[in-house]
Length: 304
Image (cartoon, rainbow, N blue to C red; front, side, top):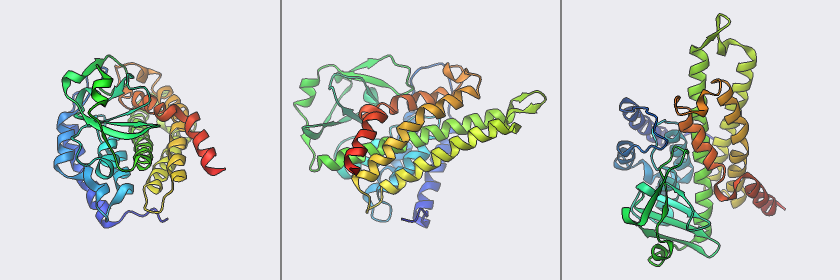
């Protein structure tokens, strides 16, 4: 597979860039632990970029690139499930869309703002609409708005089964992989700007070779993960390709987040600097679908 961007894909990503520029112009960074940009979310939907996966000239690989670009932003919107999963699995489901895997009583990201929930389990896949009355907000530090279902049994009782549960799971795994690459790239962009401006020993931090080497290593890993996700979204991709992208993305979270925080003097561990908007999201995403160890075991089972 050639990892070239077509003219159509480039035009779509240009639209995404314009949407993100408008979001940056109204972004106000406070000390809130969770955030959701309603304006960005609505703008993405209005411009049609979340439907790319359903068009032959774009497909799932383009949707993965859209997710990557949007998740680079400090403004948070529900894009991964809506762009990668919803168009092909549950196009009738209202969005924002939250994804629930595992225990129905667990805390789920985007649930406080969601209008529908996609449920993935060993029994299959289904979705159901929700309202604010169905959700209890959870006070969490992962930057995403987080909540849990007040009455999971009542919600699941109105669920509608999807036609292809296996495809639903693969697309959800790919969506998480693409989301990880985006949030880590956003964090790297923020740190790169910091080491360019921050001076130490009379020189910008970014001029020291040891800093350059470690950030270059981070950039290489993120780029590799991005293109693995792009490849996993192609028409010829297999389940192994998808799990490879997810396992690699989840495995690289910890070492990259460590470096990003270290080059900010650990300041990004607090809410005083916007780095948490990327790294805290990455820390939660690395636990999706059982985490890197589970994803690597699944990859081994598929490969051997």
